[in-house]
Length: 86
Picture 1 (cartoon, rainbow, N blue to C red):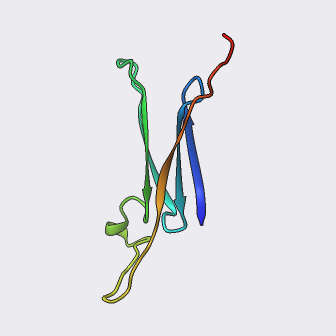
Picture 2 (tube, rainbow, N blue to C red):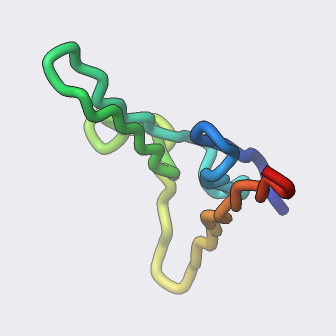
């Protein structure tokens, strides 16, 4: 079951969609927007616990011997639509 989706598109409509299930209730977003660099970038990381979880204990999933954990996520490409007749 998909819990959340995040879509990023460029001019023209090409891009990607990240989807995550309930096993990834947290996401980390990274950006690289600096005035001295022309390149702009963004990344998003599905996470099973919040930042600093191992230090704080908040949101840590404990998997005892014999138990299991399953979470899924994926990336779907978005293709730009072709302009016909131009």
